[in-house]
Amino acid sequence: MNFIYVIANQFGGNICDNTLAAITAASSFSKPIKLIVMDNVTADSLQVMQRCELLDEIIQLEHPKLEHLLPEFVAAACSDLIKDNAYAVIMIANTYSKNMLPRLAASIDCDMISNVNNISEAGAVLTHAIYAGNIFETLQIDEFPCAITVNANSFPKASYSESDKCSVVKITDLALPDIKVEHVALQSSDLDKPLLSNAKVVIAGGRALGSAENFARLEDFAARVGAAVGATRAAVDAGYVPNSYQVGQTGQVVGPDLYIAFGISGAIQHLTGMRDSKVIVAINTDPDAEIFKVADYGLIMDWEVVLAALESAVAG
Amino acid sequence: MEVVVAVKQVTDYRVKVRVAQDNKSVVTENLKKSLNPFDAIAVEAAVQLKEQGLVSKVTVVTIGSVEKTQLLLQCLAMGACEACHIETELELKSSLQVAKVLVAYVNKIKPQLVMLGKQAIDSDASQAGPMLAGLLSWPQLTFVSKLNITGNSCEALREIDQGLHAVAAEMPAVVTVDLRLNSPRFPSLPNIVAAKRRPLTKLNVADLCSVDAAKTTAISYAEPSKNRSCEILEDTAALVTVLREKQGLL
Image (cartoon, rainbow over all chains, first blue to last red; front, side, top):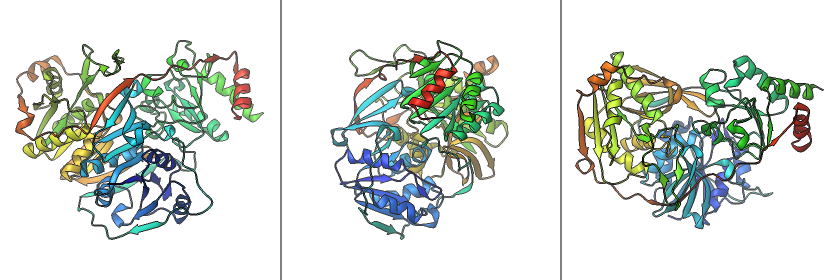
């Protein structure tokens, strides 16, 4: 029971960059760290991770059933590997880990703490957000192992060295359960656009934008300045943008260098998803809007006037 | 086919919770309590399946020490057939404890489908559903915004960070529901009256299973750090300057 396992955040054959934040979080425990990667990641992606200074070993699990990262099989594959060896198992908080990690935690009979933003006392004390980010709870772990999801924005990314720091061990003789579940299709947002979770700049809109066409205009502007587009729950519910754009308690938590909020009033459920952004700019016609309380710069003006000005600034 | 819907009572989403003076707890006494909004969507989905003739019985279950009659009557008024309150003196703080009690209940009732909200708005953990599925070795369809049941199989659209994920599974299965699956109904007066005649039973947790102690202890609570000081800009030109010169954008 002496290893910290980080399960890589992976998508489309790549190990996502924010896995490095989970590795930094894992280093708080002062124990050897092993990174677990599923099946079909590219050789390039693995090679980059081999240079990560904090890693002790990379374990690649290979089995046809792991292709689509279904939790029934990923949890089973990891469970066999870590059940006698894990002190903690850590993932970045997102829909992959929210789906899979509780299943894995239950299978090795350990408690799980979600959305952790601080780790102290060599991993014995954790702080995480509850009540839509209105409250931070600090917990003491009385019994290890424990399973943890961490906010990618709360931990710096582990650094790389010039040369390989660890080896890759492949495990192929996995006995996975016969559970009747299958992947049908993934209807993914445009993969060429910056990922919301990874973008340095996020430009977000609320229901005030009023239409899918206006969001398309926001997207055009975002594309020109290399930003990702986010949205409030109300804008997603109204059908202006797909669910994958939603920032907040029930969507994604982002922490870019710059967050520009167009016509967002600032419900606490939205604020919890973006208040860790380094710089926040808010544009709203209501001077009393909650969004201004978390913003660094505010402009009390109609979003459309401001967007037009920014569009012409880019064009000019 | 029977469906069990597991529900939780939470502090109403419109109420702002606060930390107690000694920082040792969250003050929730005397605040308005409600059915967890995601669980309301799960109840609605199960009732709709019954109305479509795909499900014969919908049973709603909740766990806890305090009185849950109002919560369960609300679910019955929405159209659930039966309700059960699993009573326990312990405060089940961890989702693993909750999942283990639900496993024991599911093994007793033997439904084909268990539905839950994708998360409770107090803990925001999103753990109970997948833990339950894992302990039962059942398929799990989480964050579901569209659900189709044909014969013994269910097909779902799942809301994930990258978009929508279509998955299919054979029942028995666990489904956790997302916001956009449906809009829960407001019970009509006749249904509120009818709900009082439906079976509302109580079980003691000890009759189902033993409960392990939680493996964590809460030490303290805090509210988010102070708000930022917002510099209100005069016009769009000032914003362009800030974005261009301080942020390197544009």
